[in-house]
Length: 226
Image (cartoon, rainbow, N blue to C red; front, side):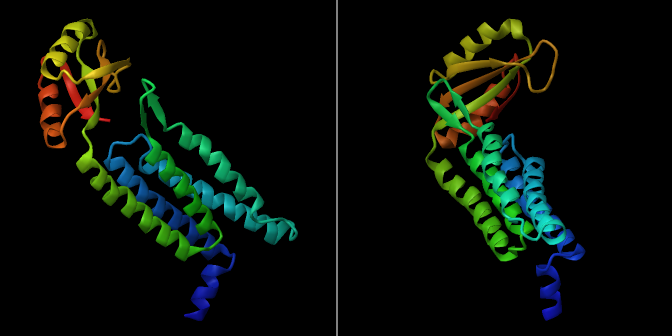
């Protein structure tokens, strides 16, 4: 047992492989949870962030061990903390100067990077506990918050962009709380289609029915919560 612990804590081929595999697994677990909520940063993003951060820490350890013993093993990995902030900032959107979204995803990406760094240095216990806490926080607290949430951001995709105005008028009649439409290119890539994002104030219990009603409208391809 002592020999196994020594093997995985020292810097060698086995420990390097183990740390990278664990980075893949832990990053994937966090990414799955984010992906289930339809976030732009899903499993692939979190896996790559965790792997990249882990590899950065491993490179620092490798340089210190094989090239320059006086090299600070934390110097290279330290840049990940600031660098990952720019990636996380890209997931934060401010719509209509009123609604901010993506903060949880940005924080999750940053936290995933720290897990990767911990694994790269062989801090397995810290990485494992942080992964568990991150997933629990993102799932349980999201449910607690969503139970009280009435504000909903809906993405609609309309079949015919030429019918945008009458379709929006029909939606306004059904749901007067629908505001701040943002027009965008269709995510599906369907020709002549158009994407519309709406802010809606709908009771939590009625949100699923709202999405179904919108999806069933004549000119609507689908409606999902963003």
